Length: 314
Image: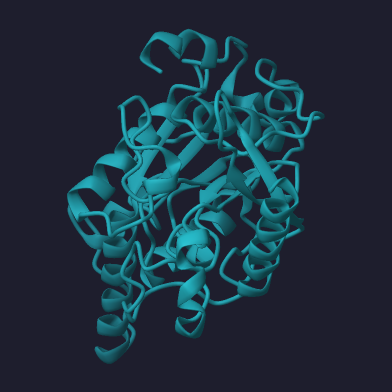
């Protein structure tokens, strides 16, 4: 991928104050009309991210998300997709993957578009600290916070986006890494405050459990965000994830399940696919598609389709 950086970089030059008109005019990459195939290589994943992001921005969506399997590092040779989520990814590998994705997405924007990056853990810390200060002021009688150089009120006023702890204005804000509830609250507060003139892109936030379905991430965290309303207006520009895993009573399907991948490239539907096999085979075959992230029922449908296809080819 390193040798293809120029191909992925956008070249339009306009003032950042006209960001949303820019989004409607972005060029390069796919037109968004042709149905994409499932990304089964890092190059295809990178192209899908570029195309989905551009198509979503052209459609004037300014609240977007991009998801890759935990630990996937764009630009670094790795295992084929079928093994990306076969086991838990170490925390260090997850963080390296998040950082690589942020670096890649940041380079997709022209140099005169201000892009800021903030870690989800940083957003969580800022949110928790703000809540504690509010409770402290309330318990002390609700008086106004002290003013003057160095006071909390002065520091907050000096920040462009206090909710995320960002000092300088940005046209695009990348929120990197898995969100806990505090981070989600901070992001949603920033989203409401900044308005549509600023794009916010969630990178590997794991809202709605994306890429965390098969316990490739620890889903026992009390702060995990998995409620049905967790998207809060964020549109999936690109997602690559294992589909939901079936229950233990269907453990016999596990080997077949490992051959599946769920994906979405905006504006196309979500789909479950399986990489093609055989001599000189490439690409993937779709087994299911729908308007939202797949459920266990959809996984079962895809597995049934995979089984039927295998029987017809015998």
